Amino acid sequence: MTNRPIKIEVLINSPGPHDQVRIREPFLGLAEMGIDCRLHERPFIFNNCIRPHSMVFWQRPLPNSRDLQSQYLGWLRKRGCILLTEWDDHYKLFPEIVRSKLLDLKMAPLQLCHAIHSSSCKLANELKEFNPLVLVLENTIAKVKCINIDKHDENEVRIFIGNQNRTIEHLKIVDELKMWLLEDKRIKLITIGDKDIYREIPRDQLENYNILPYLKYRELLAKCHIALLPLDMNKENECKTPIKLLECAAESVVAISGPGLYHLMKFYNSESYVNTIEDIVPMARYFSQEREQRKFNVLKNFNLINTEFRLSKNLEYRKWLYQKIWDKREHLDVSLIERINKETEFKMNAKDFQN
Image 1: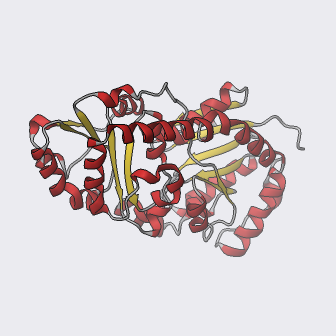
Image 2: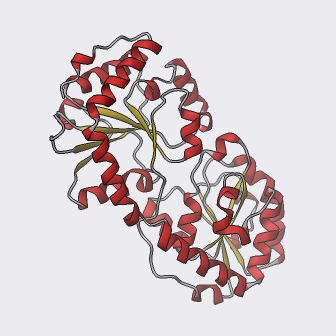
């Protein structure tokens, strides 16, 4: 049967600010378009939250054993469900305890599912060694307020640093950043969840916050003028998405970015992209002095994300894609069984899938 209406169940395994762009906004957007879509936060009981004949998206599952992941998959198949693992980062960037568990499980969350649901083409290529079917749905911006160029006429210049897990990069810029603030009292540094920079900065030029809810983070970013996005260039970082660039553009903030990942979007942010992390602070100094250049950067990038990277433009494609996958679910399950029975220790029967 291909005429069952599509039903979507989304399992949020690690609730928090980071899932707003990747999970909540797009799937709630689909619900507003009339798709029967429900979100569930951990802990979940499958019997209570997953309806038969559903399309299940599971954000970063981490089962206690490989056998348990196989049981989850079998349970879903017997109820006519298909399972897509939502995975948006290279596993080598995860904390050591998580990486070790994934290796112990032989990457079960990525192997023992119908397909991987991911965020970039480069990441998809890395994940294909575990599962050949990877869907790429890039991150977009749901909330784009009116452009605010006037704030760049203010005398105070607010510099934003809200990057997570970038200790190495931050240590490379902290000395020059401190020197800059000591020389220029117009500069105020705004940090979120930082453990490496704020200790070195004069307290009268610092605002330091713990991790904020997503909308509070966006409100704070909107009050800033320049954001620093240092990122080393390596394969794992290339698999990230440039969502912070999009958020800065949406909040009329100039993003000083590079060298890793962001060079892939030089067409978007070329005036403030740098080739080495050591160039981050000098470039920020330049933009702190050049108000007209800041305004030009803000206007160009705002117009670009407003026309090319809005969630509203992406939702129709998601709706079409998910419907096509749902219509082909029986073929997808046959491919899953052929792959699992050939490549893994688990054996499954194609007849178990209750289409």
